[in-house]
Amino acid sequence: MQNQIHSFRNFLSLGILMLMFAAFVAPVAAQSVLPPGNAVNLDDGIEEGPSNALGNLSDTEIWDIFRGGNPRDILAPTIEGQVMTTTGQQWRVIREQYILKYLGWAPLIVIGILAVFYLIRGPMKIAAGRSGKTIPRFSLSARVAHWFMAAIFIILGLTGLVILLGRVVIAPYLGLEANSVLTSAALQGHNLFGPLFIFALIWLFIKFVRGNFFQWVDLKWIFKLGGFFGGHVSSRQFNFGEKIWFWMVILVGIVISITGIIMLFPSLVEDVRWLQLSTILHAVGAVGLIAVAFGHIYIGTIGMEGSIDSMLKGEVDENWAKEHHDLWYEEVTGKSATEETEAPAKEEIS
Image (cartoon, rainbow, N blue to C red; front, side, top):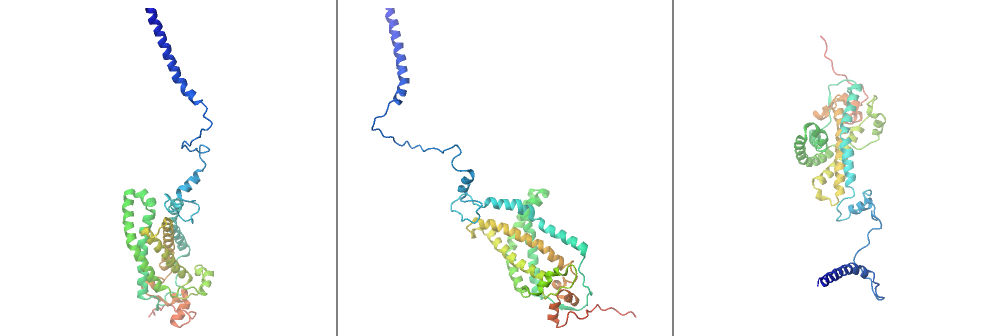
C-alpha cells in the first residue's frame, strides 16, 4: 500500500512540473508561429521617434518657433497668439547693459566739461562793459512761457532720473525701502506733470519759432565755433547755438511726449515692440536733453555776462546786443552796431 502512495506522489509531482514547463514555453512558441499568407499588418498607433536622441531641430530653432519668429529680425510682424515676443531679450540687454549702465553719465560728463571750460576760459565778459542803456528783447508772455517750460522740465528731469536710475544710484546707499518710497513718489509726480510738458512745448513753439529758422549767417557762426575762442560772430535775434537748442527741445520733446503717452496708456498700441521702443527712446531723449540743458543754463547764467537779463528783465544792455546779436541790434534800433561802442558813464570828480 505504501508503494502505491509513493508512486502516486511521484506521478503528481511530475505532472506539476510538466504544467509549469508548458506555461513557460507556450507564449514563446506562440510568438514563433508564422502568420497565415493572407494576414494584414495593422497600425498599432505608435509613431516613430526622432532619428536621434536630440531631435531634428536645434535649440535655436525650437525657441524661434516658441517666440513666433527670429529674434534677430526685429522688423518681422508679430504672430498672434505667441507666448513670447521676438525682441524681449534685445530690449532687456539694451536697458540693463547700456541705458542703466552708461546713460546716467552723460549729464555728469557735460557738467565736468563746463567746469573745466569755466576754469580755463572764465565767463565771457562784455568787452566794452555795460553801457547803462537797454533795449527790449523778450516780452512778458515769452518769458513766462520760457520759465514755465523750465520749471516743468526740471520737475520731470529729476523725477525721471529717480525712476530710471534709482535702483542703481539710490538703493545701494539709502536702501531698497527708501528707493521704493522715492521711486513711487517720483512716478506719481512724473505722471502728473507729464501732460503739462506737452502744453508747455506747444506754448514755447508758438512764442519762439519766429527767428529760429536757419539762415546763411549761421554758417559763419559754425565756422567760428560761436566765438567761444575769440573773434566777433554776427547773429540775428538767435544765433546758431540757440537755434539748435530750440529745435532740439521741440523735436526731442515731441518724441518724449509721444513715447510718454504710449508708456502711460500701453493699450494704445497692439504691438508690444512699440512699448519697448518707447521706453528706450523716452530715456535716451530725456537724458540727452538734460545733458544739453546744462550747457544752455551755463551760457544763460555764469558763462556769459548780461545774458540772463533777457529772461529776467526782458531787456539787455546795448553793448551786449552789439557784441552777440549785432544784426538784430541794427534791425531793432536802426543804428549801426559797428559805431563806437558807448562806455559806461563815469561820475566827474569835483
